[in-house]
Amino acid sequence: MLRGSCLCGGVQFEIERAAGPFELCHCSRCRKVSGSAFVAGLGVRTEDFRLLSGAELIRDFSLPVAEHPPPYGVSFCSRCGSTVPNPAPDSEFFEVAAGLLDDDPGRRPDRHIFTHVKSHWYEITDDLPKLDKDALIALRMRRE
Image (tube, rainbow, N blue to C red; front, side, top):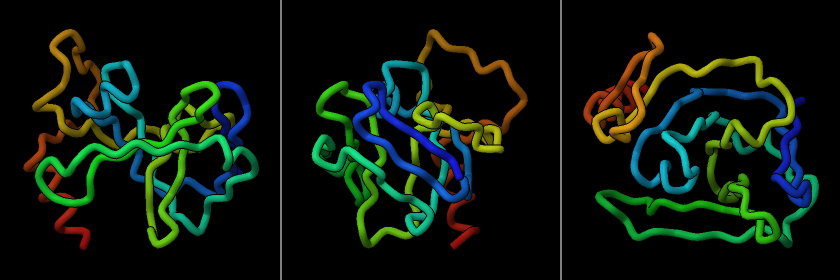
């Protein structure tokens, strides 16, 4: 069981297991949400997620659809501002920002995504695969 929480500890959750993938997303929206070069997003099955406390603290923000539905959305703790998981009840799968985890997920990042729009000031220096938008779409289409 993996436990996670926001900065103030008001929102706490647990995940039965980290399903993956574990992606480092360099898109401009993820950079703005994280305030960093990328978001480390860990794939989780909704059925494996349990919110333990803080539902009343969670707020949602959605940007309009950029190209294709769904819109870009982020949930955050209204007390400390940390991004927090808030899966849609009808979703099978969602991503948790790995920085929220209090425990080791037992996985390491699989790939960098949206590398064609990464920040100019950050150099990717590891050997993980680097997928631009087209390569990511092709990968996800093969899985469906």
